[in-house]
Length: 410
Ligand code: C6P
Image 1: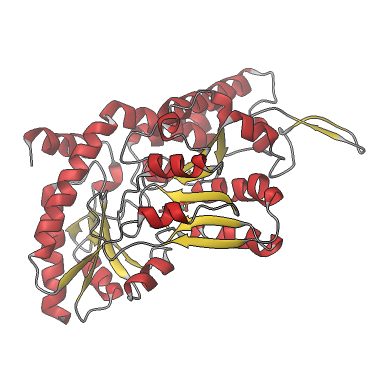
Image 2: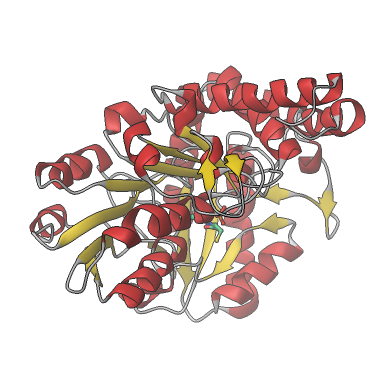
């Protein structure tokens, strides 16, 4: 631990009202950040500010409140563009979250290109959101889903992945960071491998965007999706980045208001980017809150966040492994933010329940990654996941909690 990183967590904790509470009489230790992160006051204020002062629909009215709301909403698009280093603001589509971003690409971009015998390639560490949409469109078109394997550490077997990209591969969709294992994938290399064979790639950034700088141009990916609520923003809002040329050529995902230029009963002319993909009144407050969250993260600095969380993960890994009978699931050399573990003879749900009695919030279950659990031959894990505001003392509390689990049930 360095003084600088300790100061970072301690300084910013005060920005998060939810952290300042007790649970079952103990100070809350919130280690379920991969599920959703807590929100800083700046985000809560931005949401309240919209509802209290600027509440109006966007892109429609010429009145002042509507103009203010539109400005804040479109301002957030610019923030998301800079956050991802996307070349153009119109390449940023506001969606409900990573899940909707992936579904949009599956249905508007990939499905129309599929014919029987075609393949979509994913990896064995994907979240259900990056499996099920592909299964659905494969089932509808006679295409199939191929899965690149991972090794016993939870690391992608890269040469197997590369060899699986063949003439039938029409699309590759991969996670940058595994939510169940913490593995960081070499996505820039994976994109290059796919592009060398002319195959477009979507990167699921749900667990990466909160923890590291993302540069979609450096990654070279065609699409990138992340969720606002894991980046200290509100639930119900996220971002899909797509290369303008691809988005332009895609049909809309949904029809409705705002995504049209003109409508008659005979014909509709669609709006341009990004509005073609934002049918209906969006989550205006959510988008504005997301903009505030990206500002907040930018102020702290993703490099500082990454350095702090890296130290927390190393410390937690060392300390948890000192407890006899605890096994870490996911031991790839490059990991981020996530410590999944099992305690010999104790069901992970019981681990989660006992930790909760100690005020410690972890997730226990399959983490919406059942195939990962199957790969490791376990039904579930307990998962501690870190954010910028977590401290080394909280890791100590987690380790004490695990020892208590062992005392009670081990
Ligand atoms: N993982 C977790 O506890 P949504 O639900 O659309 O915001 O994000 C879906 C998603 C997609 N990909 C990855 C890698 C994810 O981790 C998630 C969400 C949470 O691990 C909730 S299941």
